[in-house]
Image (tube, rainbow, N blue to C red; front, side):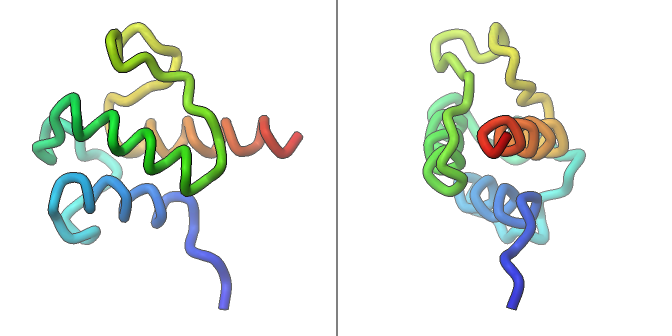
Length: 89
């Protein structure tokens, strides 16, 4: 059986933080739409770092000052895919 996609795994992590079903999370959902506050965001980032064994360039004190785009789920998935490719390369 193949490993779940990055997208599926990220959605599962975000859904868990939002206390939602993964089916309730779309790629166009913003963290705000999902009810994830700044603490939930930080916990999501930590969970993503653990899940994918990467370091996300994210500053919890200034989330919008980072190069890591957290504007919606799609951009988070794209950012993680990019970080994984960089780590593998």
